[in-house]
Length: 127
Image (cartoon, rainbow, N blue to C red; front, side):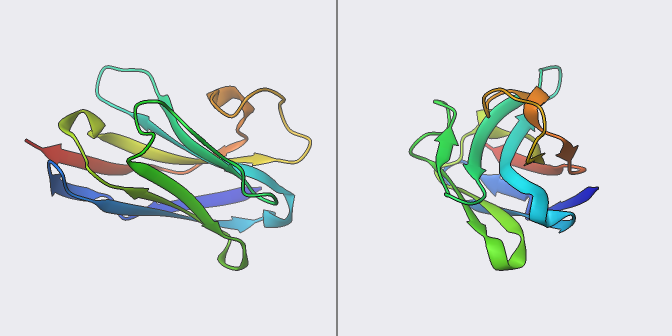
C-alpha cells in the first residue's frame, strides 16, 4: 500500500503560479513513477505530467509543456508540480498518482498504469 497526500492548491489569478506537493508514504521503496493528472467539472481525468522515480525522466502533456515543471525529492518521497503562467483552463482538481514496480504496463499518460491515487487538490484560476 502507498498513501498519497496532495497539498498546495488554491485560488490564483491568470498568469500566476502555484506549487503542488504530493507526499508518499507506505511502500515507497516500490515506487517506479509518479504522475499528476487533473479533472475539470464534466470532463474526464487527463494527464498533466509524470516523472520516473529512479532516473527522473519527465513527461508532459502538450497543454502544460513549457509552463509546468514536475520534480521530485526522493529523500522526502515527495513529488512537486510547479505551475506557472496559469490560465483559467487550468482550473481543475489535481490528483497525484503512483505507479509501482511490477504494476500495470503502458505509457505514463494513461490513468490505467497507476496503482494509487491521492484525494486531489483544487486549483482555481480566475480570469
